[in-house]
Amino acid sequence: MQTVIGMMSGTSMDGVDAAVLVTDGETIERFGPTLFRPYDAAERAVLRRALAEARSLDDRTARPGALAEAETIVTDAHADAAEKLLAANPGLTADLVGFHGQTVFHAPDRLLTVQIGDGAALARRLGVPVVFDFRAADIAAGGEGAPFVPLYHQALARMAGLKGNIVIANIGGVGNITRIGADGSIAAGDTGPGNALIDDLVASRTGATMDEGGRLAAKGEVDELALSALMADPWFLEPLPKSVDRDAFSPAPVHLMPVEDGAATLAAFTASSMAGAIANAGGADVIVVSGGGAHNPTIVAMLAEATESDVRLATDLGWDGDFVEAQAFAFLAARSVAGLPLSLPETTGVPEPMRGGVLVRPD
Image (cartoon, rainbow, N blue to C red; front, side, top):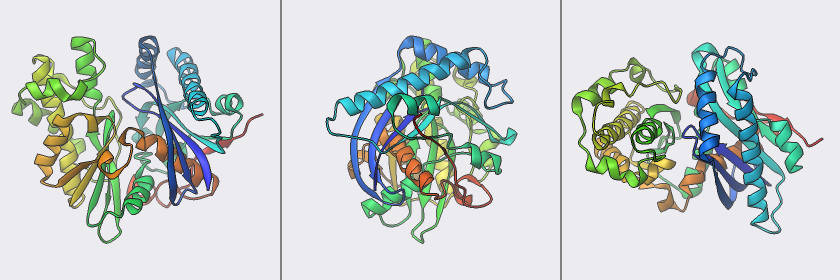
């Protein structure tokens, strides 16, 4: 067993999640402490510029313009998060770090996924081996390169002793699911929007970073015509596994609405697209919701209504739903150094179980 710090900066770009996991990459011995290091407004502004500039990339290693500045910000923020986590827990030492970095563009149809963050610089600063660049091998082999948490979801479900057809749903900037069938089968994929469209709407209208507690959406009315227009995207007809970029869906149908109605309609878009993916994967007896969307009761209630399933929050099972993805990259780092696959044909569409990640050691 290794003590691993996993770190994740999601597509919502609110900050860095850091979590300790004791694992061998196959089982979970125990959860460790966690820490959230937010991005400040100036850092988020640079990251948003990097998102816009990354759309023109055809070389995943290129760092023109704001991308170079953003990579430094991402690396330093992750180092800061790890250092603060260690300082807050005297006696804690890490054997390994799993460093996802910040996705700024994801286009598997172009064999391209771009995560910024300097793994070698992070290893030097922390004095600990770092595994990073988790998705590249999967994309190069023809996979979707996402989602990358299903094998960790499977380990969590086993640890919790969940029975029946189980879906673990992560609602971050993008939504994704892992379905673990009662027969042991696994299916996974992105489902469409998570929080990103809502966050962007609220930020543009109010200056806030999110719809805190789903309160705006709860006050609004869902515009069914706008929801139908949003759901008409042909991407939703594609079978799992599949993945999608944070900015793949246009929020144009809600642009002229009051912010409350726009938030309600976009919340319904998240829930409806996720419910459709779950149904197409075979349905669920139990759905466990993690990620930032678990803090939005409006989305959670809409998902429960749309699926007629037993919907629980990750916290109901003793998991820290805000840090499941950070823990997942600790788990995947341990799998990477053990030479175990990080993705499967059933989870990303890769032709065969695929290893991945790049290990760098401190100089």
